[in-house]
Image 1: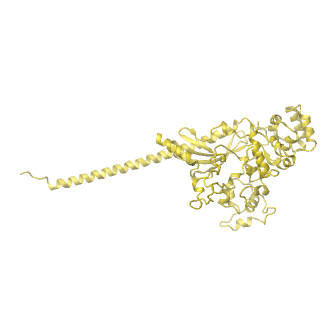
Image 2: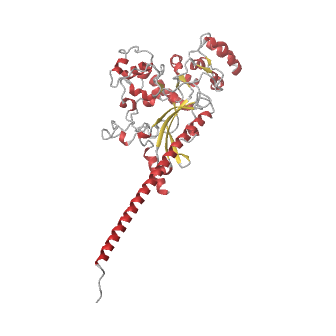
Image 3: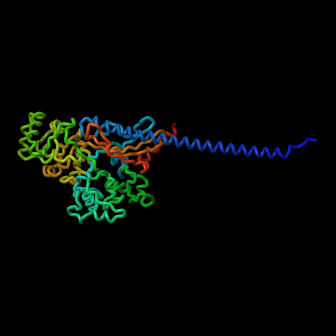
Length: 442
């Protein structure tokens, strides 16, 4: 008669199975933990790659501006890469002005560098100019002028704004000094997020699903299929020009200064000897009111204008609006132009090749309009904004930053930087799909 296994054998087997199950569970736990650690490390590497891609994009933008064929001009978007630019395993995009030509219902993503001189400067625009901007209110326009002035009152306003800010919690004082960033608008009386940024929650100028769904999700919008980007996209506080020529040392001649008449005559006789006398005779003894007025009254051709453009300037060097890059909405703010003439300028502008200087404006504006608009216009650009969005390897590690690059000096400088990553994805559904397909292929 065979004996059965001892009763303890079954107990040992159960214990062994429990131990094995525990070891397997611990192994799976450590395996999952290691996988998550690896994924975290991979995401961290991708994020660092994206950050370095942004730095590379900034250097790329600086190089583009330095190598411009005509100093002080924005490089032609067709001459450089602006979207899906590879940097090692990373990729970056320059988010630019929205493109209205691809969608009749509203703007879609645009790419490229943006000229700061194509905008209205908060530190120089008059209240009348500010009031023409789409969406601007009289209360905010008055507050803008008061904020930057070194006194407490605005001509035509209701009184001192400082008391308004002192009544807030916590209280603060009216700055009474120039704006240093557009974000300062949020501090002003009469400003709110809807007025400044409109429906454009991620500040990319294009319409996202959450920006066109009414009250379902933030931000609040009218779900009309057209993005309202607020006043933010029309404003800057960085546009200015040097008083020296592109060599960095020789001063530009102020054509509006009667004392510069001899210097101007010398310049014309050197650069345009055959026409110098005629140009001076056309000007007479009355100095020009602006560079535009000088070129129009002197009837300079595009070729003649190009010969002397780098050597002349008007009385104002801050806040000039580049007539070659500004939108209709911004040009309409300029005295003497208005909505109708702004539309005409933008329509004629593409036919000017290359678009440089301002002398072509005389073909659209009459002398009366030139007298008013000329002091506010330029054809130069020395500051650009580079809104750079980037991803690292495998389309991960999304980062975004807005940089203002200043080329006033021999070495370009980044004078402003804002991290826009917390605003979320800004590259649209098409880029997201493209990156997802890349992951599937690898």
